[in-house]
Image (tube, rainbow, N blue to C red):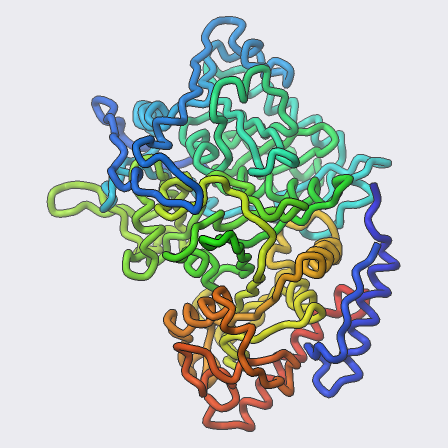
Length: 617
């Protein structure tokens, strides 16, 4: 199957950009833009004298859903397909002999949550943190506290489907089959020196029609714990009997590629995917997120390339009591996780979803949230989810007065990217089916540090595609070294780092689905108003929540609108719970000329960024 030709893509986008260049603003006018879809080693810790048996706190029994859930059954206890296979034929019994792994004589296959904790403690893989809602295992992943994008590679198999369709470049860096084969052999040899291995069989995608079977082979228990939290767990042993994975990840994180220069790689770290061989290998990085995001990148390839193309999305999703679902797109710091966690709606998922002929569905079985400055008052769902079976990554621990280790989410001396993974049933108000109907509303979240975008605006279909392809937010001073003023951050489809196909492929699919299912698109600014960062003020969570509520209950769609002269979208004149002067951002600025200049500056940044999609610039 081939996607639309690059020539067609360039023609479509050049036409769109050309129209913009003929306008006074060169940016976002819906009246002009019509979208036409086209065919290190972790720290060593002391081992406690005896494993600790952790019991799930009562909060786990209080989850709710728009679907009926038995409150007497604990999802933690429900997950029990564990087996420990021992003997010279252990590898063949589990099926990893097909990979060439035959050395280990003990395979820990899909351990229960309690077994994983026992192994983590016994192996000395981390510490037990005394979080407020329950003891939580915590790990330190060494110098890699985030993904290593410059070390991610995809094998370019000449003449293959992937060779013809992957959007090769800085995100999808090509390497050769020979390099992969050499590294694969190195990984297999490493595991064949081990006496034990951890194997986890799971699923990605809640809809059985497109669900993928994924196998992970790990060295340590905490790594199996991570993927157990993050992926869809098998419900019974029949699900993984004679498991034939669609893709296998072999994580040899303790090893490095000493020959990286000869291999043409960027460092001794290597995360390499071979789609045709249905396998990936990981060297040199302990960071848990490499497992999660690697599979997401593959879903971004598999779903659009299916005979019945489906849309993979980097977004959160929730659903109301009447079955009305909503999508929340947004980059880090825009409020995607916070705003999709709604006391009146059930959470489908917080990060990765698909949209097919049945509606929207979660890819995952858990959540992976940032912990920086985490407090119960501001992020209650995430804060309360940190208890037994959650796992903290790279979070500072301090000794309390009674000698216990407690997490300190405000200490970012290790990293600003501290994380917690937890199974989705740790969220009280989660949607158990993990699937819902077609979305009524699609919300693009942006944190505009220039302070010129309204708190909410309605987008035409053309503007929706433009903002989707642009994927805009802004960085502010202090967030990164060298940032001294607001800086635009554009990430195509709100997830450029994970796109395997050209961004317009996903935009095509979104346009088709929005038109077919009459979905409404909105731009919500959670950033500044009344001036740029340093002068204006950040939108209050109350204001933003009122905007979201108005979108979801239909009030916003019925509002009177005024056209924004610079950006072209429609802005509500009034909304319940929102200060009237905030709705028109120009009114909130004392210096109107400064607003006009700043707004035109940002519009020009949009246009400049968009040139890359037309083959110009």
